Length: 371
Image (cartoon, rainbow, N blue to C red; front, side, top):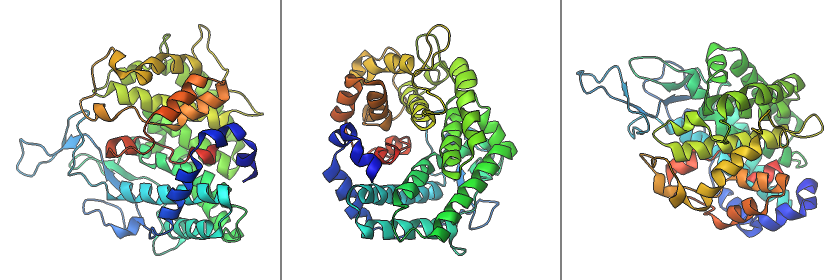
């Protein structure tokens, strides 16, 4: 609570009554678990997360629809996504409650948040196993892929929520230790399993999201070696290989959803700066020769967020009208770089988008927890 209270500028920008209303609403949310929904095509068990690749569809040329075929940018509504929705529901309610607790100290918020966490991650009957062996499976092709690790990007709110809840009697030493162990185990898996290594080495937003997760989970579990590795890779791999001299991300611009992918990758690059900057290094001010750095990326995209009609590239094939919305990177960058235009943009955009695709691509639900 102290860190947030002392950050007067952040408190001024955040809508405190809305955050408390969200916490109040989440008080009545029942616990959810991976075990609530069985994935019929999964090769794993009831405790194993399962999902299908978004852009894969039944094969129109075969009687059984196998193997699935890819239609880039076109999400298949028939794919199994129950585990993703359950995970995001747990994350959202936990983050809402933890943010409410950080503001008010209301123990009812903390008690319910701890219950949600304990049942989802720790209880033997309902816990999720700390791996993603069966994420973004493609029927008829593979039981799971490294690319599926992006499905747990929404979990980055959870360690921050646990830290916000640490002063509550409800967050017992046993529960806190168990949660740190779960995230340490998951970080170990995603750092050593071939699926995790494949995702880490991707040349686009997937690699960025791997490092965002690794950084947050390493911070939570005290893994200083991984934190320094993430800083090093940001400087030596992510920026030089993904950002163009003008601050754009060409691999995202080449997709069928160039606008939303450009927003998504910048959002996560900024989150890396937010999580990894401090006494051990400042990524906010880091630049490559020629000026490539996070400020360059922000300068490139800002005009098209402030006025989407100026977007010079093709529109997204889906959900283009739903963007832009208020996202945490606008707040983080505005505060860290003292850029009032970003803070004004943050305040001007919709705070609660209804479009499910936009919500799915918004990694942080409660930026208060990161401040």
